[in-house]
Image (cartoon, rainbow, N blue to C red):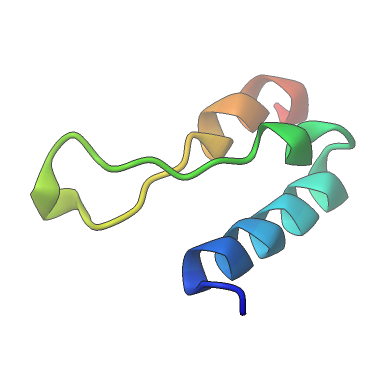
Length: 53
């Protein structure tokens, strides 16, 4: 059975691929440096900022 984190990662990859081909391969979650910022973080916005302008 897939965990919620794994399911979210698959959805993130799919959405990133729709926005920019090849971007889904870089999809990942990490723990925020500041616990008050939540349980999961991703750098997808920073990775897509330049290519998508």
